[in-house]
Each structure stands twice: as structure tokens, then as C-alpha cells.
Image (cartoon, rainbow, N blue to C red):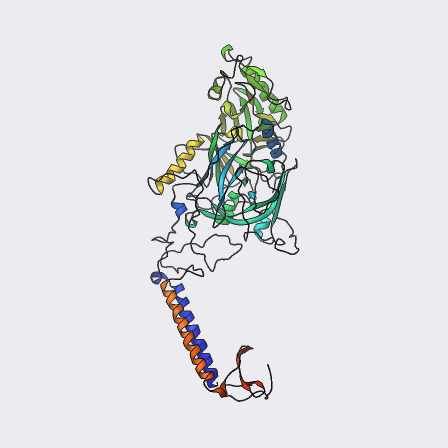
Length: 628
């Protein structure tokens, strides 16, 4: 090898050694590794969200002062009963520790639905009001690019830049994206799209995205309470969805990946269980992911098995065996099994039953509050509040006035009998107070109407009105799945969960429930983590004495690494100076350029007629005058 070639090789070796010394500090292991500011003693990740006593920090928005018109609530339910549902899940076997609880707002009285405030996006999360819906599987919120979205109360838009799900990704198909990619050209050609259309003309469409959802609580302590989820970024809304007050919807439905409970199980290995506890007539309550720990207001549950409905796999279907008004039976198991069976649907306002059951219920209630009631409690039947619904069953105490309505929410139990719904399973019955099947007339003082309505032969829907102050757990950790019930004070249950975390975290700190949180300080990005399609938001925190992978970004160095780079720079300068002195000191040896050629270094010098290639010993290998 010629002298100059040996010198060039030596320069390359010195540069490589210097760079290796700088980067070698990044891979130290065990006791030699520098302390990681995001790892506690014992190898547990520090998590500001996991340690916070707030299960989920939310922004409360006040309900409108005027009640939603009854006709709008009926239209909302008609929309739900006619919707086209999307269409596999097995027990994850994951450890059942940790739960995340979202306070609920809204009410049947004011909105016809309950909603939660959720924070989406990283690094700057935005808060959205989303209807909690066990009859839908996809979560969606308005996109910043949406030109056909309504003016919702929250008014928040999601920025999807860089978050789009690719059409060919498995999660696109699993979440209900297109079976065939659209193709074409441009930035939008590869995006995973979605569309949900409903029979009465309303619908949503847009792009599926993947980003962080802030859960808080102790469900994800190693990721600052955040987990990656797939959801819809809506670019067009129509019908009732365009006009509703809530920003969007959180899908809790059955048997599809897009449902948030299924994503938590399939992507993050969490238990496939969640619960809803709708507050009283005035609203409130809690949505929880994970199994709730025992507290004074989380009582033991009575369970009934889930049933399979192949035509509507997103429904949570159960078997009801009987229904009673007071002591009068109004339905048998056969009566309630028609159509799609009995469905638990949190997004439906009222409860709907087959025609035969509706008429039997109306007749039994009429007899109980009129002919069979004692004279001091006797009511009279009055027309409903909406002439468009002549079948409304409403009652009022004679002599009621605006200033003295006589019958009010506080004393309904003195005038109306309870409703009992019995489910298949030992002890699985709900005995509901009148407030769980009646709604306020609105036009006549002290008048109330039956909130159980005719659903023809389609089946039975148990809507939000009938599960107020009832803890309902949807448990898919057992084969086939089951649903648990227990009457409780849902606002007190929420307080229990917040107090539980307050006691287990920073003692004496009050839960934050009235404002959106500032985003937690993210740990340094992992340079080796996949940028797209990652099934986990962060790498697992290693145990002590294992290799500690440094997570550096372009501007994050420790002192040892900085020293290595300084050494590399000094060596580079020294090598460059030596090369210059060696190659340019003697004018006869000046080089023009050095180009890579098939893995070798080629040398040239300036001759009388141009650049001439020479070997390491300065022997010409090209004729004078040859040009590059």
C-alpha cells in the first residue's frame, strides 16, 4: 500500500475510533450507567400522572340553562335505534390492577346523554366533550381541517398533522377502515379513512389517526398516564351529529378493535373491563377503565352473561327473564327476546321495549296510579307534552299548580311504583325507583311521563334513563363476557375513587377535576423506537443491572458524551491539518479531488493537461491529458 494511501486509512481509523468513544458512553450498562432522571430507585418510572391524586383532570362545562326539547331526545333515540352498527376479542389474561376514572357530565334531563371530557394529542393535548356510547365502537372528534363540522359547545378541533394512520396498516383494517386502499397520489392518498352513515341521514367521515389519550389514574403509571389509541378525526358531519352540543363520541362498543376498551386490551395488555355509573336525574357519574377497587360505593355486583348477536356484534346483549311494574308482571323472557334481544345502550336516552311489553307496562302503571291508588295519592292521566307522540303516558295530581306541583322528583316514590328488571343469572335483578323510568312533562306542573317507549318488534334497549345511580360493569375477562349490576350513588362512587388515589399518591393533595391539565413533561424520545405502527407508546423501563438504553434526542447529551464529541472534533481538525500539510506542502504532489470508486480511494494530481490519476507511489495510471 502506498504511503499516502496508508495515511488516508489511518485518518479514517482515528475518526472512527473518536466517534466510537463518544457513542460508547451511550451504551453503558449496570452500575456503570449514569442515573436516569425518569427512573426511580428500583427501576420504576417516575410518572407525574400516575402519582397524581386526580384520576383524570377534566374541564367542567356548565349545562345549558334550557332543557333539551323532548322531540329532540326522541329524534336522538330514533337515530340510535336505526343506526348501522359496525362489526374479535378474547380474555387478555392481563393482571387486573389499576383503574382510570373519568367524571361524567350532562344528564338525561338536560342533554339526553352523558359525556366525558377527554384529552387527546401529544405533546399539547386538547380537551374534547365526547358522548359515552356502548352502542358504537369508534371514537371520533372534529378535525382542525373540517369544513363541514357543526358548532359544538366545546369548540375544540384536533390537529392531525403527522398522526395519520396508513391505509395498509393492520390497525386501519382492525378499526373499520377501508377494505381496499384508495390509491392515487398526494399526501392524502395513503391515509386510512372512515365513514359512519345512519339511516335517518346523519353521519361522520374523516381520517383515522393514532395519538396519545390521557387516562391518568393508576392504569398506566409507567407512561405518565398516557397510552396510544386510534380514533377518528372528522372532516364532515351531517344531521344530528352536526347539530349536537358534544364535540364527538367515545366508542365503548363490543367486539371490535376500535372500541377503547378493546384497544387497551389488544394494544396495551390491560384487562378488558370497564364500567359506567350514570349520576342521578341532575347528571354526573363516572366512566372507569379497568376493574374498580372496592370502596364504600362500589358494592358487590350481580352478573348476567353476555349473549351473542351475529347481526349486531357491537351490541352488549343480555338475557332478561321478567319485568314488573310494582308487583304486576308486564313481560316474560319470551316477550323480551324478540328482535335483537335486550341491549345495554348508554347512548340511548329512554328505554324501548317491544309493542306488547309497552302496552302491558302502560296499562299496569295506569292502574297503579289511578284506580288502585289510595284517594290521597290518586293521579289523573293527562295528554303528553308533544302532540306528535299521542302514545305518551303521562299523569298529574289534580289541583297541581306551578307554585304547588304536589308531585316532584323528591317524592315520586310516594305516587309511583318501582320498576323491576330481572336478568338471567342468580340475583341479577334491578329494582329501580320511579325516577329511572319517568321523565318530567315540562308543560304541566307536577306531571311525569313514562320513559319506556314502543320499539315495535325490533327488541329491547335499556337506555340511560334506567341505569341512573346504577353501577354497570362490562367484563370481557371471562369467557363469553358478562355484565354486572349494583344500585349505588354514582357521584359518591366518583368521590371514592378520587379520594382513593389522593390517599395513595401525594397525601393531603386535593383531586383536580375542574380544569384541563398541562401536558406532563415527556421523557426524551427513544431514538430506536419505531416512528409508526408502534404497539407501545414507550419502551419498558429496565430492571436494575440490566442494560439501560439512553434515550437521546439531537440536543440531549450527558457530560461523557459531550467530551467524546469534543475529542472527535479535535482529532478531525488535527487530521485535516496533517492531510493538508502532507498533500499540499510539495506543489508537485497537490491533489485535485478524492472520489469513492467501488469502495476504494482514487488519487489524482494536476498535470499539464488536467487531472491525472496516480497510485499510492505517485506512478501515473492514466495518460496525460485524461480528464474527469
